[in-house]
Image (tube, rainbow, N blue to C red; front, side, top):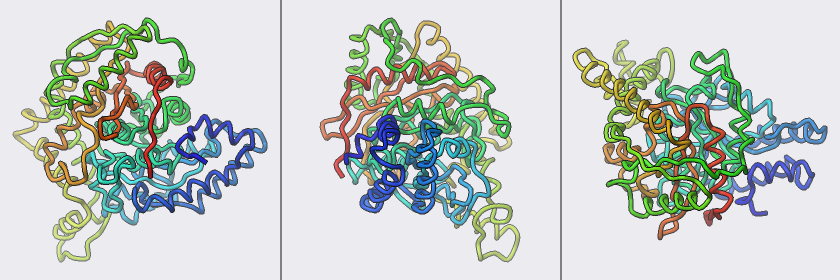
Length: 483
C-alpha cells in the first residue's frame, strides 16, 4: 500500500468501508517506523503496545458505528505534550525520566476521538530551535534529503508525517515551530490563534506565544484535527470561550473575490530567489482563481526577530527556573552545597541552546535593562499587531514565504545562533500578533527540496485560511520523499 497517499480523509473512508481494520493500519505504520525511523529519527519514544491497544478499542467503535472523525487514525504527539504514563522528555536530559501523571487537554480530546497514538515525536530541546538538532535523544533528518534538517522545533512531527510514519501529528508553535518544519518537510502545518487550543499539559516555553496545532498531509486533515482539539478549557486561563467553528465548512468553496495581501518586506533581500519566485507563482495562481492581490507594507518586520527573542527568552527564563534538580528535573550526583547542586543539575540537564536563551532572558529582565530591552520588545509587539490589523482592514488573508530558504544541511547554521534566529523572520510576527497561519507546500527548488508558503488570517478566522490553503492544494500535486 502507498502510505504516502494516506490522508486522514482517505483513511476515514477505508476504515469505515472495512477495507482495512484499525489494528492492520496501525501495524502498517509501526512496521514503517521500524524500517525507516533509524534513519529519519522522528520519534523519541515509540509505543507499539499502547498503539495496538488503542487500535483495538477504535475498531470496536468503528464496528459499532460510533467512531468519531479521527477514530482509528494513527498519530504522533510532540514530546512536550503531556501523555499520562508515557515518557515526556521535551528532548532534554533535564526531563529524561519524566512520566506525566496526567494527559494534556489536547490528548484528552484526541483520546475521546479514539485516535491511535504511535509515539512521541522528537523536537528541539524545550522547543528552542529551528532544526531539531538540539534534541538530546533523536536528531531528526529531513525525509527529502537525510543530510538536511527537518526544521524545528516540531521537526519530528513534520518528518514523521512527511515520511508517512504517522498519518498526522501534533506540534507546538512559539515562533514558527509548526510552520517552518512543515515547509522544510513538504507537509501542511497550522498554527491556530493564540487561545484557540488549550495549552494545559503543554510544557511551557514562552507562555504568551505558545500554541498547539496539527501537522498533516493537507489543509483538510488539519481542519479535522483542529476541530477536535479546539475549544474552552477551565484548566487554561488564557484559552478563549469563543465557540469552535466548523473548520470544514468553507473547504471547497469558491475563493473568487477574496483579497490577498502581499507585504513587500516578506519578499525583499534575504529571501532566497527560488523561494520568492515560487511563492509569487502561487500568488499568480490565486489571481487566476479570481483573487485580488494587494501589495502592502509591514515596516516593523525588520525589528520582529529581535522583539521575538527578547520576549520569548524572558518568558523561557522564568518558565525554566523551576527545573533545579530539587523541585523538578534531573538531579546531579555532584554538589556539596545547595547552590552547587542546582548549578550542576542545570549544567548537566540543559543543552547549550536552552542555556543561551535562559541567559538572554535573564539579562533582558535584569535591573537596569528591563526598559531598554524587554519593555521595548513589548511596545514593538503592539506595533506589529497594529500593522497586521491595518492590513486586514482591506484584505482577507496575507500570503508570505514560510521560510527564507529551503532546508539546509545538518552542518550549516547549527553553530551560528544569529543565523538560526534570523531564519525565523517570516514566522515570528504571527505569534507576536496572536494570529492564525497555515503553511503548505507551493513548489520545489531545483534540487527537489520543498518550498512552503504561509497564509495568515485574522484572529479566530482559521476557517478562511484553511479554505485558501485547500484551494491551492486542490490544483497542486505534491511530491512524496523517496525513502
